[in-house]
Length: 495
Image (cartoon, rainbow, N blue to C red; front, side):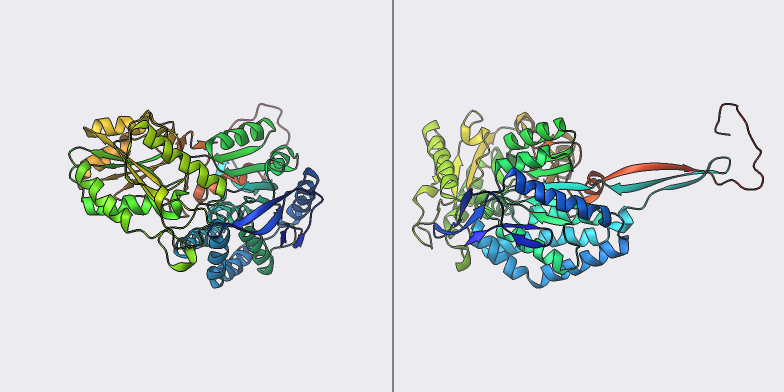
């Protein structure tokens, strides 16, 4: 099966002869090939978006909302189908895929109410018989470049908000799991979105570069690893575009001595091994403030050993990694951790999966006595590897977290309200959980980290999303009445 693009309201093939294989990660079998767009293919999509943008920006807010409400109903009714497609190409278990769809639905629902967020402000009589007011207008054509780990949720972080704001979108999903994005585009069209307002081009770096350089593309939203996010931000802004590039992470979970250790152990396992650790918000480092480390590691190990790794369609707890290359990369990190002297309390390299032996398997791995100089601590592994670092005090824990070049998410587990409040104030991280291991904000707040986890000023969805996909305009207005006093060449003053 060949997977093409969605341009100007229909599925189409491109001009490029380059292809990439799409796999079922749980079997290791090639299930399709995806076309990799050429620069010319990207231009066709952008031109379709540019034509559509001129009319869509003039569509009433009521019409935009009607399309989004209809789209929400289609996604909600077909959410099981969408979850199946995610599992088939990404590998995450069906329950996790269903949760991804639900979080995407929440952003659609937020976008349905965007007319209220697009309201301007009005000031009467800023000067004598002069009024001033603000309006927000769409940018035109915008691009969204999404990663493999959330083939539905991440596109839905951006596309509904961009469309509700009156823009036309070119979406480039990951070539590793492209099918979900095409379904979303078809369902948007079924909901009444005009042809060309949402286009999908599948591709690799060539397609990304074409979007970053195209003169008709006004803004780019990107989610991916930090090196690529930095590249996208630098190249996109150099081309004069507005860019928000969300990068990688190394998320710490601090457990204080007064914490409920069973609650903390459950949270560490859930946040560390969900989606096989392929989440930018995954907890990959647990910071145990002594004297809780031994008891906490024991509890986590018990839970990890009970996890069932296998095909996500069989009711397993954790699925495979997305590709053979990624599985080999994560496995190499586990090898490096052992070689560096970390203690492999649970070693996922020896897992016996409930699935095809040719799948891309690596079981959940728990390391203890990890030190900050080890690669399993410093690098974003993006796999099912949880590292325990032991520290002697709260202050040492905060110092460790703040020394990280990443600042995406963090969590603290404690029953001390004062300690929690102090942590949220002192920690240099964009999203903080208090007894919540994965502090992903709801759609009406904004998602984004600090430091090398975000390049750009505005975060995803919520109020920041509206600001990113619009630009403000201030109008100063005076309508003359019969009392107009005639010509006055004096300097105008606000009187």
